[in-house]
Length: 440
Image 1: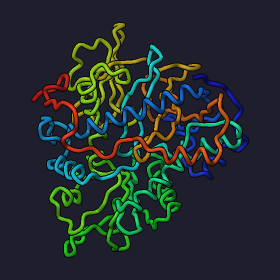
Image 2: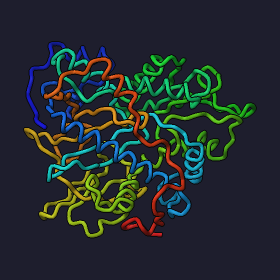
Image 3: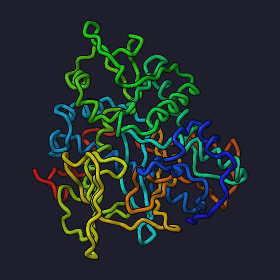
Image 4: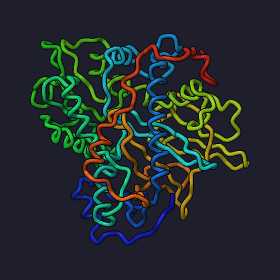
């Protein structure tokens, strides 16, 4: 893995904005801006490195599916309160698992540790963003700048194929899907990232032959006579993709209809409710307890650092580095990030130094789509925490040429990933007291 400098394309900001990346720069507290899409550099990977990342992503996904099933099982000892979820949320999760609700996508944050080995920092399994950057902006950059080389990036094609498979297997009722998203307001406004991610996913569904409609989640209504959710046009919502966290959705008034099973004909949600188990950092100590010493994992504990001498404290529902605390053994003062999270509890994960290239600390965002590894985006930050001021940078596989159409089609058809979890997962059942640092 190497970092190279390069001259950005003339008019790069206009180019990526027209491609859907409407937030190409980040506003700084002093009123200035800096590039969020950074094409003044690119990262070089070998095909051997990419194959290792792909294999690691597949292996981690299988472990996450297993851990999600364990967490929702009554014997695990986890409760709604323990996970910081609204009362009744785990019942919704369990029903989702019993139905074997299919997933669409998720994103791992991976890192090359101090020993050069791949390690999992976390997974955003419910509301990940970064698809436009990965599937469109960096792919178009490759076509413009290095068209003969390759990139680990089948994100767009796999999304289209995923929607088509969901329709053809009956996971989608009929031929229509609503795309619902949180607009955000004030300090929570993200510059349009959530909205544009939803619209990009809607475009992939259209390419798969589905009829679509998008609008903010706040415009969803409830009809008590027909006992169903209605859209902005007062039409029934049958299938819905929502870019809105399950823990927030179930905590609102309309979310009670899901908890209380008020619907006459339940909406089919993407992402499904079982993904709430992959949205909480409580997953990290469960992964470590069920796979102790695994080469891809960092030791993690619930509520306490345990015997860790260097650690990162992460709030269960934290995002974009909010409320993270980093403790090092060198006696320096702990790094503490501001934010609104933490009341729901913390996990403690072993600290690992991020690789540094020309002062940039690097995390790899690795995608799972329809249960298959699908590509990555490189994220850079100035400090130890990948936060709101991080940047995304394209990458290239330097020792292989771009594949032909037949090879691409073969990759897309090659399916090895696990399906939705069950609440009685395989392997030894461990109660909550088997999770390091937990309390019953």
